[in-house]
Length: 358
View 1 (cartoon, rainbow, N blue to C red):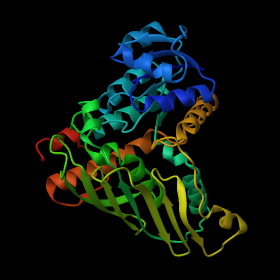
View 2: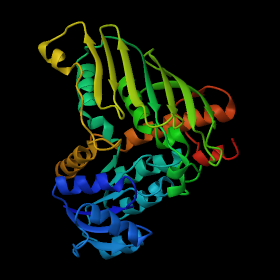
View 3: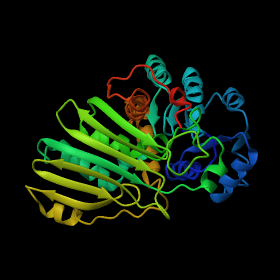
View 4: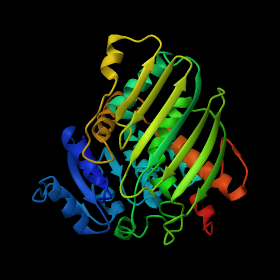
């Protein structure tokens, strides 16, 4: 399958690993800075591979390579939707890094156009493929939790000034958002997915406590009510000293309790069920080794999308999943702006509507 990558920054190395692991034909790479492409390819001993075309203009790349079947978008967040829609209009399947868009209108347009064209869209929430997450999802689908009572996600990370200086778009409302949109969206995706997806209301509070050189928040909290009666809390920050502490998901049901911990929801710290089996005993204390906070899920994301294209089915993590995660964060932002709980579905809100908050 012929593939191209647009955006060769921090997260791109995980995409290249996934490309190599899945045997895709790496046709082209695109970045506004050619040096970024060469640095990325060198990490994977591909710098001398002249079969990989290099571009600084994604439209030119797509125009010159009509054979492309799959494109991954790993640019600054503010460009995701525009590039995705261009690919969809050219009948190219896409994997979109989080967030899939910066406003609800673009997210809805991606869904609408991709469904009309029959193009596959995957929102790259790769932590859904973590071993601990998959085991928890299986238990949930088997009804082992019983009725869910409540849950929470805690993303307690560190991002210092050097991180933001690497890329001036980070922490801006137009191109990134704050810690909730950038660092916490994967955890928020897992919380909503596990708790039943159907959200009733969201009430949020955000602050800018330490990163006064940014436009957006560095800590955010929210209370979420679900239509199934369950409730949840969200806590996310980049203010943890001196380094990343944890990304932890808690789920509490009448017959089960699970705590998925580690730096990126990759360990099973607590695994207790009323109908305990021998397999459950093996699950207790499970740890999945990861080389970075992005985990190992990109390879599985790619494998699933390749299969979805070949078998004409929806990807496991489709565009609606991406919309759901985005909707949660924009609902928190809207709640902060209005001072009121926000009732879902959220129809019309954008991260840039938060300009001037801090």
